[in-house]
Image (tube, rainbow, N blue to C red; front, side):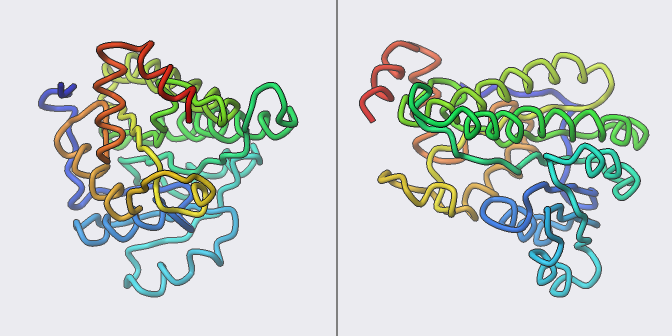
Length: 251
């Protein structure tokens, strides 16, 4: 099953102006590389410490611009529109994965996941929607997880924060379509990054996921399933939620 936008709400990467949050490592860093290869005219690489993306800036002849962004700092988010005023594509990639069991993990760890994965994503979207709209429309891509759809108890706090971000994505999609802004959700399984190094599961490379994300945007796929596990889980979730829930409970 492919869920698709139509016509005017698709966006070409070539000549686009893109903001990538969490650009310093993992999927974010891979996205910057893919955006350069696909011909984006400008990429704003957002990170808490701009020194961590300095190599991306130096290697790409002015096409990559470092922007400081801390999702836990409201003033940092408020300053973002002034730094990226020509953007037409926002990729909300920054996230944390601290929350384990909802019963035993320190509540502050779970709270941090929510502050980053839900409230941080919401804050950046709220800040940049006026920018995208002023530039004639565009797209927002929220990098979520397969556990947005069905909770994995061993990652219960993280799953809950990503489920909240999934709900945010659906709400934004309904609200922004009439304003010429498409909203995409990305639902990867385990990715071979620092965030997932403790998971004993097959992992997809960040580069493969980045390629699939951008291909999904250009193809107009509202639900972007960038790896075999995400595709399998989505199909199972779509047809029988309970079976996927039971499978995740055993992991």
